[in-house]
Length: 169
Image 1 (cartoon, rainbow, N blue to C red):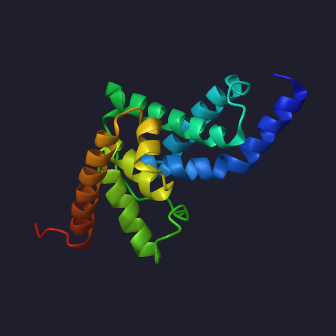
Image 2: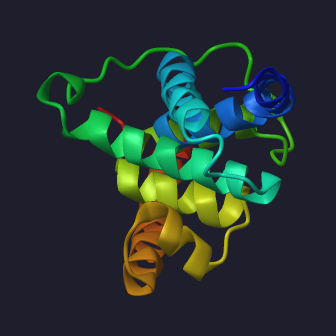
């Protein structure tokens, strides 16, 4: 990579890294895994920098790599076991929630739904992707995006209801 391209890449990373980490965190529910996903995506972007010429395409390319890397991670056997503990104090990624309790509940509920549904919900409602854009990013059909969105919303509602009204054991 030429020095001017490398400087442009550094500017891109500086400008977009935080937003990419927030998006990845919403998809996977773990800040450490989100950081790993973004690092993987940025490494692939570095390698493909000349092919991804238009600045608008870079975000789409990186998000697609994040989604695919997350799906690959989910397929690995050792990743299926998930410890569940308290969420980190920094929950500022959910800017639309009105209170800390709402943000905590939403993050907990997102962590409880399947990864593909979570990715679809994040792309559709956090990143404001259209059905067509989400289908392209997830490398699936528009019908799959619609069904995953519907199932994800149902699962998210159920998870939120379970958090707000814990069962009496």
